[in-house]
Image (cartoon, chains in turn purple, brown):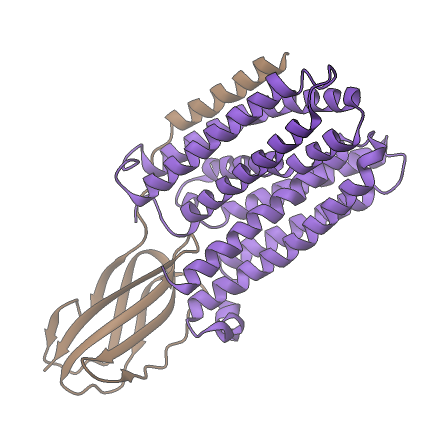
Length: 292
Length: 120
């Protein structure tokens, strides 16, 4: 592994995290629009995430330029390589990402008025959909699935949006647990649990199909790619167990004196595991490949 | 329609689509070169030809003489993708040469490789 491989890994991991918090924050602003007490904090979370998203996406692009230029850190700004990469899938990926972030920023602006029912609400939902679509599609511009067909690209976009939404929603749920009354918190967490079950089913199936399309089920126990797939699978299994523990153990007893502190700690652990999943995904997307 | 039923319906559609699809093929590779890898050529080499298995962006080509300094070949990376690239080289003295190439595949990944030849 070269220094550029290390920088590429770090930059891409940061892209996953910042886009996850951007998507999670923007969607939570819509879903939790009636929870006035936490809206200012949610807006701040989304704004900071979007700014980090712009920064990490641009950083990742320049790291890729540097990796191709192979001329030290100054190579990140090599004008010829910059032009070549801008006109390649790497440039398309950045453009799609920046547009997606701009659209989510517009959705954030739309949350500022206090009354968001009616037409403005519809515009906000459309902005969220378009922003998520652009961000999800950006991941389909490069990477191993480009060897496949449109269906695989659509599946990857869906997989990315669902996963990033889930992990990015953990802080908003932590806020719900921390700031709202026990009754409200339980209601919101139960609603999220219902949504999450549908999302998780789609997420896991989409991931499984993509894995089969990429590997045909071969080399999972004998190749580096297979090793990282197994690592990712183990972390996904762990996060599912944590999510189930929240839904069936911690949330139901929240109103009956159940510990908020325990739930908040468990949500923090879920976030760490989620970032670990992003780490394994980063390795799968950059360092190893199904047919390398 | 219940949310569980909708989830199952979506899952069934995705599984059906998966059954109709095939696994992906391998990454791109150098299909052919001129001179060929390991070739011993009698005529002066005036250009290198690299042909890839699928459209790629050739980003870099370095030519080095065995135990010698790199040879300046004035290569400019390609903006658009292509499968065949001709790279002009200066007049080469007899000896052993190695060509290192680096490309960007359609997936945006960096792929490197090399081949060598001898000129008599």
